[in-house]
Image 1 (cartoon, helix red, strand yellow):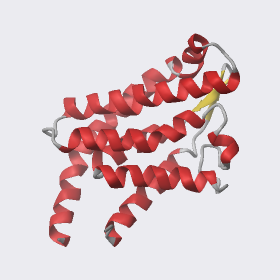
Image 2 (cartoon, one colour):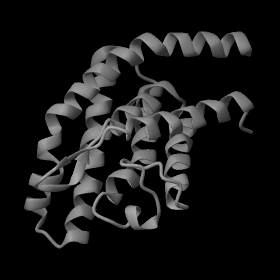
Image 3 (spheres, one colour):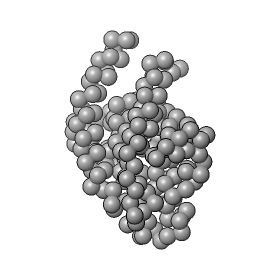
Image 4 (cartoon, one colour):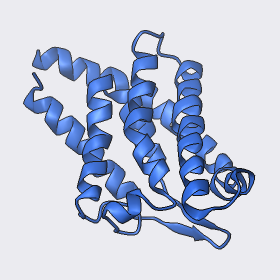
Length: 182
């Protein structure tokens, strides 16, 4: 059974993901914009248990699917999820879950966290996102990689670096609050 505080945490990370989509930088050569939303995916996976990590991004996707404008650029609707950027968005609950699951039994250090973010919030998200981008737009997979992954690598590595540091600092705070609230 999910406790009230867990519902609040999941909702909070859904809201953080929404807020991170406020800054949307379109690229002239790609239908995929630059946003800070994968940063929120990293933090959800790094700070929440696997169920809550998944739930937080699933809530986000569900809100957007029913038309609430939570996606980048204040868009929403199923058309976004089946469009060129949908693969990225739909991958986020699974990426957060996999990050959390991977980190659950590992020693909390910068390298383990960074590698988990690299594998799941970057590579896993790119694989699903680029695949849908190629399928929906009809461009060859190699061109989809050039438009939907390569330009984002430097920024995503910076996000992973910062998110790893924040996860190390915030995780003990969240755990101590959980122990106090029992």
